[in-house]
Length: 259
Image (cartoon, rainbow, N blue to C red; front, side, top):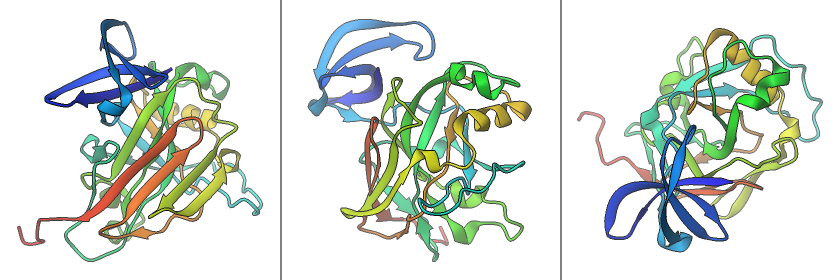
């Protein structure tokens, strides 16, 4: 099932719905609990899609892909983790805004896991039971803001640095898909998810050892090689077969560094 958040022309109200055959069925209630259909339906082409959820927490993992023809390294004992704030989230079509200071900004096409129920100390074997669904993410980073000690959080945390969408797909075989990206229509990334170093089930088990995962948490699972720096005027498309295409333009900040 495909879940979305959306608005319709002439109305700023944020609505929730499911999508089937390009038709949206609106619902109200709890995405992770009980919800009821309102009876209202809309054509998908008439709706403006938003980020499919506003995550409770956004937890990313770094350095989690091996190149297609490289030997895959062993699963690390301590995966590299970082957080992104909810204020970094935007939806399809919304602009990624570059920071108002010099320095490179890089996008990263990633599979995002949406947690559907509370998980603490869960085993890798049971990890699938806490997954609600999957969406496409773009983990945008400003590396000039990485701390000299290696901490990434500031460089990952700017507003607009976490596009999500277009849908949450609950029926997705994450073991057999490819992650791709394009910049201005040119293919930059194209890698099988099986090249992930720490698999999703082990990643969930690891994180839940020290942090209780809750419904609405989102895990960004890493990006394949090939992502590049972006600049004003670019358009970035992050694509995962079976989920969809997340497309965002890139624009410069309208705020000066001294403001």
